[in-house]
Length: 406
Ligand SMILES: [Ca+2]
Ligand SMILES: [Ca+2]
Image (cartoon, rainbow, N blue to C red):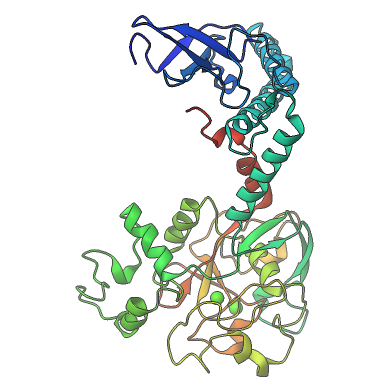
């Protein structure tokens, strides 16, 4: 573009005109929008020029020469932004929190309205489109949340009872106690081999032991045959749960998906699916094969995730198939001292908690309350991820993520 770089920074004290005109040194004129979300510290605004052949706002049909209506919503946002900046530059530190909140709110509202105006859904009479813009932003948020929680089960905030009653289970499951958990989502399925391998290949790191380039346990090139009995599963069953990963690998995989490992308490609450019984399907182990791959029906290998019946929360394979890493370190005394509110495990320990039993274990190991720990990967330890509802709403609500400038 002659005479005007596509992006340049100019000083326009807010509130500012929404559409501006610039004369090109090479001749002609262009119009460009001011995305007010790009407020910079010197009080200026970053502007981005529209293509040289654009002379009118594609939705308003207005040019800078004519007086036209700004959406009141946007005007208020810009004013709020200016006010926030004023407080900020005049150093009113005691108001810092309020000002930051005002800036954030203003930024998000303005971003949402601008995103709407540029969207195909926009009402052409965009001077008075606030209701439409609000609906648009709401729909975008809902769609983003739906996408982020696809194939996840929701557990609402509240009290959950975990552990085993006196006289039942192992010593480390006592006492049975109530914990309060904030709302969270947890994957309905164990992380699959295909999905995990995509992550490892993209990162070129965190490979499972059986596929580690040059590793001694590599099923094709390694000197140790530990994982080789599962070679056919690894190569032919992408939907089978990943195994051979450490707790550290598991954390990295979940982090790459903007998720995290569930805490041990979250895992047990999810596994119970609203029940206090030994298994999510009751107290009788006779029904185990309907819900789980374990030593009696697995044929000595993991199976395609999601093929057995789900629990009451719609989650599959919490009993069996593969053990699952949790975020917590293992301490056999932890249920005695665990805090009531969102317990996150002991601060030190050598093992990470694994839960749920596996294709290689008996029904007793699959009990909802059964606790175990490991300090290394194995051919029957996998994972699933979780995410706090609060963490999701923080990211899903940011309309600034929409690329609004053509
Ligand atoms: Ca499992
Ligand atoms: Ca145990």
